[in-house]
Structure formats: structure tokens, C-alpha cells
Length: 262
Image (cartoon, rainbow, N blue to C red; front, side, top):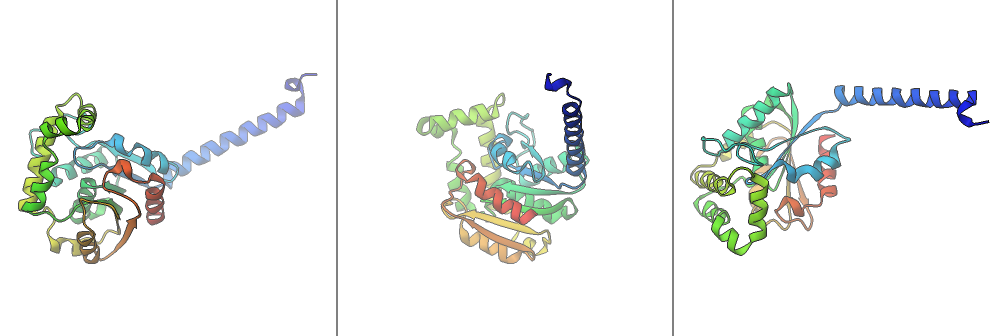
């Protein structure tokens, strides 16, 4: 006698199927009604694809959202200049378009600065904020140093693989235009920081500031200074971690994010 025709076998499998279906329905209900939203923001001249591994690592803990800022990741290059304020509008528009009232934000590098700006000016939108390797202090010298790193001709000559990566990341848009507009943004930041030192004391959103101990762009001093000014902040140092997001231990980073947001 084939098992498929055994009444007990059929009953067992029907019950198992029912239980599996019920589990799926309950999981979907929990996912939609109880899990918090988490928006991942990339850095300057980056795109949302850089955060795919992190999104995968956290997908069972949060409703994950990613976006590429205007002019990044193939999005049309705007006539408006790049700025922290301009990219913050991208985030707010995304939240409105998706009917998200409140969201947790993880921001890498520039994405973290955007998150801090939103926490200052639109605190009702953010539940908690995590920044990683976010440079918050700019002056003429700092801006000039970073702008040199955005010279497309030098990149093509000295690091052609990285130049090709940028061209692919921002296609069909012109990656050199993206770099030029990013350089203009840094120059303006060097003249005037988007967030002044006194702004941070007014940010009440719970914040976790993360920094790699091998970061050559963001200093520990500037990160600690902002950490001390924020009234509701925590500080974390990632060991053996440089600035590029591709070189960050995703499991370690997700541990810190999960621990803080949960």
C-alpha cells in the first residue's frame, strides 16, 4: 500500500500543511505589524548595492529599506547641487511615498550625516539612529584633502579598477559628473558645516556612533566630541576596521546595530 493512500499519512500531512500555513500567516502578521522599519543609507559617491550584505544580515530582525540618493546608483543627476539637506529630502520623500511614519536609520559615512541632520530637523521621523564612519567636522583643509580623492582623471590613471567600479555603479549616468558634484558639496562643507557644534546638543534621538579603529578619514576625536554633545548617545569602536564599507565585518556591524535598535 502506498503511503500517499494511507489515511493516517494524509491526515498527518494535511495537519502539517495547516500548521505550516498558520506559521506563515502569523509570521507575516508579526512582520507587518510588530517589526520596526530600518532604512540603510549609503555614503558619498556610493549606492544602495553596497549595503546589500548588511540588509541580508538584518532582514529577519527589521523591515529593511534601502535607497540610492539622487544622482547616485544610476538615478538621474539633479540640477540642484549635492548637499546634506538635499539628500535629507530624498529620505523624507521616500518615507512619505512608502507611508512610513517612523523609521530607524543606519547611515554609513555621508549617510550618517544625513541621518543626524534629519534627527535635528525632523526628530519625529526617526526612532533611533546608527552612524558608521561619519565625518562630522569639516574645514577648508579637510575638504581640500578629500576633494583630491575625487579627481576622476587621477582615479583612472592610478586605480582604474575603482574607476571602472564607479562607472558601473552610477551607469547610465556619468560617474565623473557625480564626483564633480560631490567635490562641490565637500567644498561647501569646508566653508560651513551643515550641522554646527551647538546643533548636536539639541538632537534627542537615541544615537549610536560607530567608528572603525583603522579609519583614516574620520578621527576618533571628532566622533567623541559629537558623542559627548549628544544627550542620548552611545559610542562603539569596531576593531580592525578601516573606512570603506566593503571592508567592514558585516556580522560585527549587524551585531552592534541589532543590539542598539532592539
